[in-house]
Amino acid sequence: MLQVATIREHKDHIIERLAVRNFSDAKTIINQVLTIDEKRKATQTELDNILAESNKISKEIGFLFKSGEQQKATILKEKTGQLKEQSKQLNEQLSNVQNELNNLLYQIPNIPNKLVPAGTTEEDNEEVFKEGNIPKLHDGAIPHWEIAKKYDIIDFELGTKITGAGFPVYKGKGAKLQRALINYFLDKNTDVGYQEVQVPYLVNEASGFGTGQLPDKEGQMYHVTGDNLYLIPTAEVPVTNLYRNVLLKESDFPILHTAYTPCFRREAGSYGAHVRGLNRLHQFDKVEIVRIEHPNNSYEALDRMVDHVKEILRELKLPYRILRLCGGDLGFTSALTYDFEVFSTAQDRWLEVSSVSNFETFQANRLKLRFKNADGKSELAHTLNGSSLALPRVLAGILENYQTENGIKIPEVLQKYTGFDIID
Image (tube, rainbow, N blue to C red; front, side, top):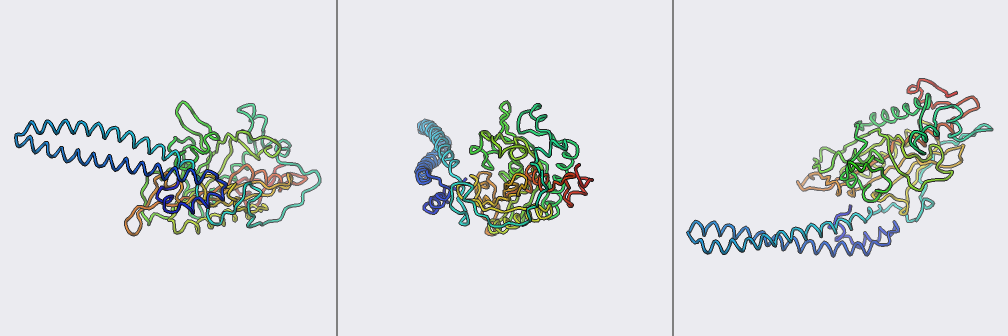
């Protein structure tokens, strides 16, 4: 969420940058925010004046009672009753105005970084890096959903029977390969300093608002209505919320966490050939990395996160590319995002396996995540997160790119985790 002070100070710049997102209501909403904030400040000033007057009169009443001037004291007590009623009404007005202001602020996405290109769809994303050789597969090579059935390692129909479409069952070597990837990703992350945490898979409303999933993605989250809790769409939500309403010291930076969780997404309206098999699921496994950074260092940290994910994909020997997302494809809370895509040779298409993003102060403002700077003043921290990595499409890439006529070879770096070198 943007700060009102920032909006007031940089109004024209913010409207200009939000145009990169194709956010057509920017000017209207920004002006409404500033108007309502003036109303909020005027109401707060009126309330403060009444409270100050009430406190002054209360002291006078005490003095009058001590002096034996009970009649004057009684008259003033009646006045304090009137002031109390006025302050009650003003408190209600202030609460309503603040809610109106917050509802507007919740509609405004983050300001795109200057590196974010203009564009409307994923076709306008910029390819900034590509690496790895696309393998030449044998005649008769098949996509991963057929591989899964052939070797009985993932059962999509059984998952549909138990729950519904998008909830696969991993079996035998398929389950072991899934677990191997999780352990490998966690080890890679902890080896470079990320502290592993295990977090809840359900979060409350405050957590959803803190990282920006609510109200923007409310329809994409599974809601447990009886307890008003939400199944997490990503570990980013509970991990970042570890620092909600926290005041840090500069010496606490950087804060690095990694977590494995299942992720749950309704993906309403998703259908067609492009979502077959593991391409898009309602439940999937993911290992996440989250950083809390000093504002001066967050973009250097973003580059390090990108390099870290590069290293993992190099070790897996999967062909991949990196895209800088355009304004029209940028997530609501992000200031700058790099997507990693692995090439699926059997499907002849790129599959997204990671997004690495800097949110700057957008989440921190919602979370009230601050630190004391060198001058002793409170300042908002920067938050970042990335997939390191999302498993379904990485697994799809391995099954398709490593297939041979005799079975599915296991990437060398994973063999110590699987205990086998081929699925046959």
